[in-house]
Length: 85
Image (cartoon, rainbow, N blue to C red; front, side, top):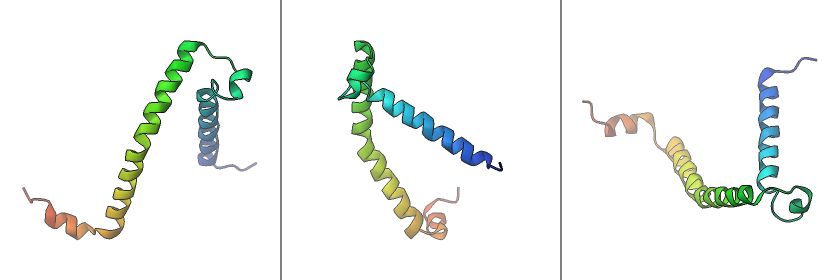
């Protein structure tokens, strides 16, 4: 079997991300009946998810602005705007 190391790393990261997401939502909905977390961990998960959800719009705006800069502003423009010294 000839598998590239990068794809194995990517698959491993996807698995870790999936398990972390499952763990974070374990205390809510129908998952709460299958996986019982202590109340302190449920409280931590609630705070973590609320901070993450509040930060996502700003991250997406930053990615959008960075993409627009990458596409529409050339390296020559940036060199002209940055001082020589």
